[in-house]
Every structure is written in structure tokens, then in C-alpha cells.
Amino acid sequence: MVLAIGITEAITDFIGNEGIYAVFGLMLIDAVLPAASELVMVYAGALAAGAFPGAEVTLFGTTVESTTTAFVVMALAGAIGYWIGALIGWLIGWGVGRPALERYGKYVHLGPERLAHADRWFEKYGDGAVFLGRVLPVARSFVSIPAGAMKQRLWPYTWTTLLGSTIWAFAFAGIGFGVGSSWESFHENFRYADIAILVIGAAIVAALVSRYLVRRRRAEGGADAAS
Image (cartoon, rainbow, N blue to C red; front, side):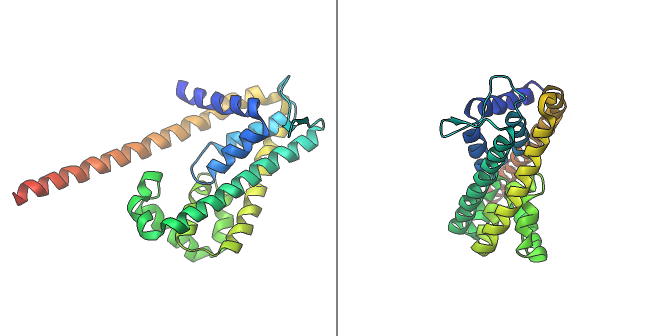
């Protein structure tokens, strides 16, 4: 619980201090690895609404006075940051290739099972798989690299990612903008989402460690039998 609160406060403090640039950077990262993007965009929307006394939205050193303009600026920062990150992820996947991803993808939560699921996803929905992936929680962070590794066409990937990320960013920023001055009470309830993310993350780490230990024991057992 304390760790979850710490993560939330670290993210919100970063956005509060760096504003649009923090939103852009965090969303860029989230396109490849989960970076609490829901919290990022909700907080960005609340910041644009003027929910935090003394905190302003600035763009290239100029304060954005209108809350509506600030909302659009913050939402676009998230959408464009995510879009650029998604292109980087696609290039990583394209460069690394499928064989290497199958071998080492587990270290970025892209093991054989997840890749097989991505295969079925792309086969079923085609180019629309990218758009659907961009508007689904959690799954949206695991589309970029597999799409590149599976040689998804760049142009459809680019525009469906931009469309999906824009819809998603404006939707969550809109939630924060609508919450406005009620941010603190909303924030308290939103922390439960952080706890859920941490639990899921811990479960993934535990599963990876367990799998490694099992494989190691089997390898040692095979070596003993051979000797």
C-alpha cells in the first residue's frame, strides 16, 4: 500500500513539476512498457483544469491561460508522446526480429505465450488489431514491439496508432478535467488501481522467477543424470 502511494505521488509530482514534458515522456515510455498511463492522463487533465493551486500548464516557457486550451495541449502531448513511443517500439520489433523476440522477449513480458496471443490477435483483426490494442487497458503497452516483429505494415500501423492513442488520451484527460477540484477524493480511490497494478506486476515477477528456478533444477537434474 505504501509503495503504491509512493509510485502515485512520484508520478503526479513529476507531472506537477514538469507538466507537458512529463506527460509526453511518460506516455512515450508507456507505448513500449506500462507506465501508469491512465493515472498520467487523468492527472494531466486535472492539472489543465486548474485543480492544483499554483500549478500551471506551460508550453515553451509560455503559460497557457485558458483551461480549455490547456486541456487540449496536455491531451495532445500524451497522444503524440505515445504515438512516437509506439513507432520506436515498432522499429525495435522490426530490428530485433521474431526469433530473437521469442528467445528474449520474456524479459520485457513478451514471452512465447504472449507472442502466440499476439499472432492470433493480428490474424483475427488484421490492421484493426493495432487500433483495438491502443484503446484497451494493459494490452495497449504490449502491441508495439510484436507489431514490428511480425512485420505489420508501417503506414496502417502509424495511423491506427495515432487515432487510437488520440481517442484514449483525450478520454482519460477528459476524466481528469471533469473531476477538477474533486481530484483529491478521486485520487484516493484511484490508488486502488495502483495496488492492482503492483499485485499484477509482483505476480508476473514471481512467475518468471519460478519458471527460471524450475528450468534450472531440470537442467541440473539432466546434467546429474548424464554424469
